[in-house]
Structure formats: C-alpha cells, structure tokens
Length: 225
Image (cartoon, rainbow, N blue to C red; front, side):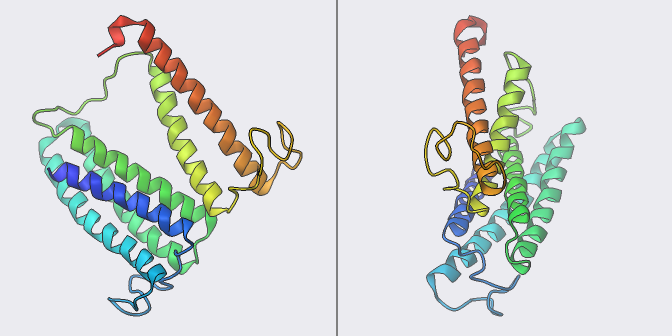
C-alpha cells in the first residue's frame, strides 16, 4: 500500500508539474520555500496551481522517505543502493525546485528538474514492484537486451526532450506535419526548430524500436507470458 500511494503521489506530481508549466504558473509564487512571503498565499488560481504543486511534492517526499527506509531494510546486496539513490535524487530535486523559482525558470534547469523527477518516479516504481519479500529485487528480463535497454533509453530521452521543447515554447516551431516548415528536413536547423525537429525524429525512433520489440516477442513463443 505504501508503495502504491507513493507512486500515485509522484505520478500526480509529474502531471501537476506539467500543468503548471503549460499554464505558465511557475512564477506565480516568486519566492521559495514560502509563497509571497506566506505559508498560505493569497487566493488566486495560478498561485494555487504552483502552491498545490509544492504541497503535493512535500507529501510525496514524506511517503518516498518512508518507502525508501522500508526497502533499505528489506533489500540485500548492491540493490540497497537504490533506496539511497532515490533519497539523494529527491534532495537534489527539492533544491533544484527552489533554484528554478529563484532563477526565474531557466529552460535548461527546468528540463533537468523534470528529468530528475522522472528518475525519482522510476525508482519509486521499482521499489513498489519489488518489496524485498514476496518479490525479490531483480533486473532480469526475457528477450534481446539491446531492444529492452534501447526502448528505455529512448523513451526517457524523448520525455526529457519533450520537456525541453515545452519550456522553450517550441511546440509550434514546426507548424506543419509530417513536414517541418514545408520540408522533410527544415531549412532553419537551429534553436526552437532544431529542438522540435529532434523531438519528432526521436519519436520515430521510439516507434520503430517498439515495433521491433513487439515483433520479436510475437514471433518467439518463449518470450510470451
């Protein structure tokens, strides 16, 4: 139950953070850790979007600390480093969240903030799945390792690049599809256009890798179930 609640809160935090960024509410609380110099800020929708993000983060952090402590006691060997890593990344994420506000949401820092948050979520998901008793910690999988590892790396990179595109306001840098600025390879290959086009290209690679993995599993009966 603790693992599910923790993962649920962290997932909500990721979604809420994307809403805050999309609604341009990241600086509705211009100071940190307080909001407009108060524990309970003035009531305004954008302020409470950002303030709500902070509250969810605080609650999720408490649950993650409890989950990591429990798993640290249950895990054995080098896998015990994962709960410790989760806490270290959480502390980094907290400090970075404050820096994002105080430095007025620089694009690269906000993207890195999201990337670390996603890593924290993935570690929490792992600790939820493998409790150290009924499910022993494991990294074993069936099938070609290169495809599994590639899809993980590509999806993570695509998520990070998507965050960068959003924070750079490059979502419409290529206003047409599937071409970009009327070309398959855009004539202006720099700045927002480069970020947007790279995001699209990486998406094609993710799709291709996923199809290859699906075909392998479908054709090899040993990899089913």
